Image (cartoon, rainbow, N blue to C red; front, side, top):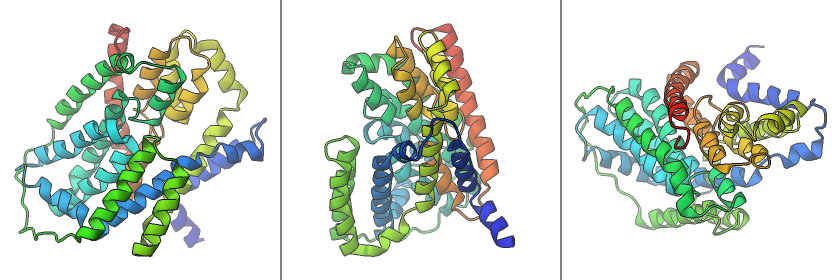
Length: 372
């Protein structure tokens, strides 16, 4: 009995998502085939590949080199926080929100642990996640929902940027203001030993990382990436397969099943038909809180008469609950791995930060609906 209690306590999110997925399978019109097809295997394999590459970088010291290098450009905790937050904000528009969080959240956690400022990990990781979700909205390749909308509605690139830029710009300002409340304590760093990185392995993992980015940009197929990456990692360091966060992948599986089954629910479909054509922004924003913004995009795209508010709504809808954007779960899983992690406290603070951003953006939508 104690074993199961410990299992539940240490994997609450996984256990809860499993039972929710199981319950969703009881919804009428669901069947095993549709349940299996609702799982996005491409995203799962891509996440697995990225985790292995990042684990390789960490093992040879690249991540240590990055975070130690950050100390050369800053002299206080606020500046260090801003580096990690805004690097996620800007780079996510090129390599997607998921990839930027996989790469830079562990680096930030390592840096703040190094300077004994664990109290800053939750606010910084929370704002890194907000930064990645909102920075990625600028470009068509920044996140999956953008790529889908860009292709589905045949946007011109300039028209797309014109729609997303106002929210992007406001989020930049909001992040800068939010980080102003982080204290400016001087960085107390022990003598940092120079990190010696094996060049051959660094080049190898860098090339594999480029292949991952090409897959994100849909230049190469995910299964071709797997055929390249898995044998190379097996030959170079087979222990990397043990570094994959299989619990996170399983969590995504359960959520895909839950979302896929909910989309078959008659109430969801009827509400979509009833309201989407007139209230794209608010319906997409609210639905994203329940089923996350990527499935919400797919579900609502065929009902909308104007793609612009849908585009803004699903991106702003990435703020709010922990599942509003599935990329947010990546940050959460990295956080819960650290010693002394407080998952419920993290969720409380994460939700508070998100709701503040969401409140500002929704208010701006009421005042300037044509731009926000």
